[in-house]
Amino acid sequence: ISHSVSIWLLEALKYILNVDKWTMMRYNDVEYYAFTERENIEMTTLEFRVCLEKVLRGDKGALERIYEENFHFIYYTALSVLRDKDEAYDVAMTVVEKLIRYPSDLVAIRNHKGLLYRMTKNASYNFLKSKRFITGIHDGLMASPVSDDLWLIEIVETLSEDEREVFIRHC
Image 1 (cartoon, rainbow, N blue to C red):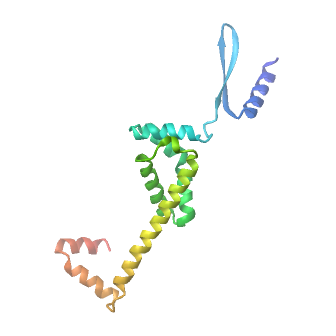
Image 2: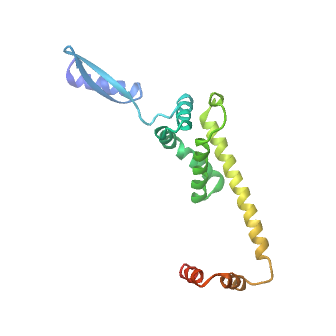
Image 3: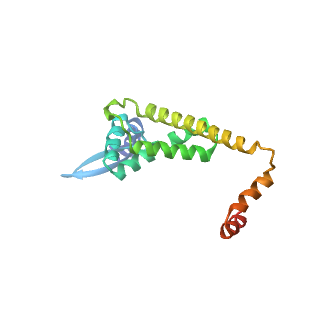
């Protein structure tokens, strides 16, 4: 087989086998070709469990892998509920933080994407509930007949001189 035909066959095999690249090795004057898997193939549930077990033991490299493989999925799931990029990012980071302290039996994880999806949806809904609660309290406070300006003046009057300067400088 000519060199150009062998290269063509290797490229075709690369596509068929869904691998990223191939390298040629020589052993005892015989050429061997080794294929490496694509780097962008998603993590399996078993790999996720193994990484999560390492994370629970303090392995930062495993946490980095889980983060790199799943953060976009978590973020866009949160974004689909919250419709705000900053809030979705906050919720996604909360979900990653919860993974670090995952309390359940790791063998019980049968579908890591389903687990992340449910954790993210629940965290997003809890965020919306807390936001609604805070907004409700805030609306209740502002429902007094005092105008916004008077309310702000009352708060500024309670500040010390140094705090007032900082407050005015940052307004």
